[in-house]
Amino acid sequence: MLYDIIIENGTLIDPLYNKHQIGNIYIINDKIVSPPKDNEKIEYKQKIDADGHYVMPGLIENHTHIYNGGGDTNLNADVIMLPSGVTSAIDQGSSGWSNFNLFYKSVVMNSMMNIKCYLNVSNSGLITEDYFENIDPKFFNKEMIKFYTEKYKDTILGLKIRLCRESIKDMGLKPLEKTIELAEELNIPVSVHIKDLDELKEAANMLRKNDIWVHMYQQTKPTILDDEDKIIDEAIKAKERGVLFDVASGRGSFSFDMINKAFKQGLKPDLIGTDLVTYNVYERPIFSLPYTMSIYLNLGMSIEELAKICIKNPAERMNLSGEIDTLKEGTIADICIMEIKEKDVTFNDKYGGSLEGNKLIIPKMTIKDGKVVYRNIEF
Image (cartoon, rainbow, N blue to C red):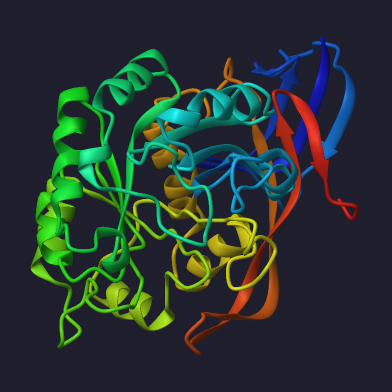
């Protein structure tokens, strides 16, 4: 049997089937295939020794902005993310219905990565950081939003809205109310940026199962903690209803003070999005998805937990469970190889908080559709 790639001796992490074992991966064309039978002659084009490394399905960036060329915040996903072991990504509302066609043709269809998105309820999405998009419900074009979410139902996962004092102005929670009404009609979830929002508790009560609470550890009051640093009942009840909590760290949307207090009370993320944009990529405190994962590894989460919330959970959001979140034979060969390096490292937040750690996740190789698209020079 002639294999295109054999990965040997790696520690295989399969988050879909909860497997953690030493083993080999065999690839022909773009698929993971069965291992050779006993006494079968083995030939290969490339063999990779992954001894001492973790071999997992490609990482999935749950929260980023990748409408490259469509606004001043948007990244080139292939250039930035493939070297970090990320093979799939979810864009969080960079486009609205009026510019979705160009986003779809220029990014979704042309990327090497698997790209899906949330459609912004604002007609033109996130064009610039200089001002907030218009989320006044009187400008929602319901018919066009319905048209695009139905026509591109394999790409558009739900609706995105940003809620804060400056974006809602004197409208209160009317924009969220109308967004959820529309999402109910379309039977899709809503991803909700919640930051610097006086109506936080009321907004939390409106969220439904599979809606996403974005920026869970942000520290601009009000927050998920009350004045006595206890998790608010509204957040607890939202979690019980099946609302998903996303880190979406960004430059200033998390603090170690918030994370530590929430962790002690058991509120951990369902999703780890970086909220990477042109202004924070390869810059601390976020840098990349593996760097952000390293923070939570040093906070006590296991590599299995991280694989679940950075691969399995977002794969479910993308409706690709069983396809991109497993190393099972017959599935697409989207694979990342990582080293967990023992190394003293200090993680910082924007607010003067820090975390002293001794582990750093280092991407060593990315395989997309059975092809090596990134390899660390030392690997």
